[in-house]
Amino acid sequence: MFRFALPWFLLLYIPYLALIVMAMRKRPPSLRIPWARPFKEANPGGKLHMAMGVPFFLSAIGLALLIFALARPQKGIELLKQKAEGIDIMLAIDLSGSMEAIDVPTGYSDDEIKDALRNGKLKKRIEIAKEEIRKFIERRPNDRIGLIAFAPLPYVACPPTLHHAWLFAHLNNLQAGIIGDATGIAGPIASAVHRLKDSKAKRRVVVLFTDGSNNVDARITPRQAAKLAKRFNVVIYTVGIGSPNACVVRRDPFRGQRIFPLATQFDEKLLKDIAATTGGRYYPAKDSKGLAKAMREIDKMEKTSQEQPIYVDYSELGPKFVLAGLILILLAFFLENTVALKIP
Image 1 (cartoon, rainbow, N blue to C red):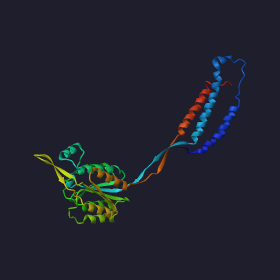
Image 2: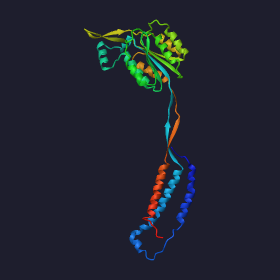
Image 3: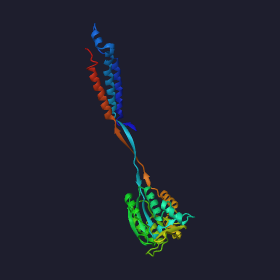
C-alpha cells in the first residue's frame, strides 16, 4: 500500500511548474565575443553549450523531489493479527493394564502378529492413543489443554496449559499399568470438572479415552459425574478403545513371546450415556484408524473462535527523496560553477 500523509503539499507543484516554464522561456544574458575560437578550442564539438543546460534540469528535478518528500510518501505493510479465544480441554486417558493390548486385524496368525509388532505395523493401544492425542494437541495451539491419567484412581498429570511442550513431556511418560489395573470412570470425570468449573473460557471440554468398563466403587457413579459436568457446562466426548479381535503379548522365559486373546471390555452404553448427558458424543475406536477419525471429528466440532483485525504498518519514504533531491541540487551547483561556468 502507498499513500501520502500530507497530500496537500503536492499543490506546490502548481507554482513549481509555472516557475519552470518561466525559467525556460527567459533567455539568459550573454556577452557577444567577436572571436570565440579559444572557447571552441577548449570545448571541441560544442559540448559546452549542452553542459550549460544540465545544472538547470538537475536543479528542477531535485526541487521536484523535495516537494514530493514534503507530502510524506509512505509505504504500508499490511499485517494480519489473529486474536484467538481458545477452549479449555482436559484429556483423560485410561492407564489400566489392558491398554497394553493390541487390536489385530482379522486373520492374523501369531507369527504375523509378532512380525507386525517388530516392524511397527501393529502397536499397543496406549501407544496409538498417545500418538493421536499428540496430533490433536498440535492442531490446537490456542487452547489450554490438561491431562488426567486414571486406573483405579485419577491423577492430574498436567493441569490445563498453553505450554504444550511441557504437556507433551508428561504425555510421553505415561505407561499402561503403572497405577493399577482396575478402571474407575467417575473419578477422572469429577477431577476434570473440578479443574474446568472455574475456567473463564466460553467452552470447556473433556475427552475421555478408555478400553475398560467401570469396575471401581466410588462415592459417585459415572452417570452422576456426567450430571455434575453438565451442571458446570462441561461437554464430555467419550472414546471407546478396542476391538473384538484383541490380544496381549507376554514373555515366557521358556517359550519366548506368547500371545493371549483378550475380550473387549469397555461399556459402550455407559460411554454413550455420559456423552449424551453433557451434549457430547461417543466415538468407537476399534483400531488406529478409528481413533484417528474420532480425534479429527472432535477437533472439527470444537473450533476455536478467532478475530482477525488488519493493521497496516507504514514506513516513511520521504527521507530518501530528500536525500536524492539534495544530491541533485548540489550536483547542479557543482556543475554550474565548474564545467558549465558562464562568462558574465
